[in-house]
Image (cartoon, rainbow, N blue to C red):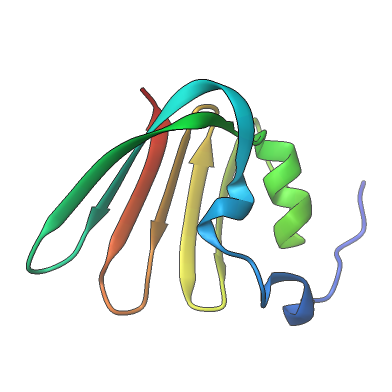
Length: 97
């Protein structure tokens, strides 16, 4: 049974959305939704694995899924899809295109 680690805010303080993306093959669709508008774009790259992102955030993935709140941002991930919901209500989705 893995031990529970205390929160480490310094680990996630400088993370940006790009931190979850690996350069290289593949295409990702990024959708950003706010109250007033929706932005959508496609970029080259792939999402890092659920386990890699769990390690970056200092949390544990269960059954290939991740659901946590870090610095007020709700993060939900499963293979090939990442969703983030911010405190102001904005949402961002990154998924395979």
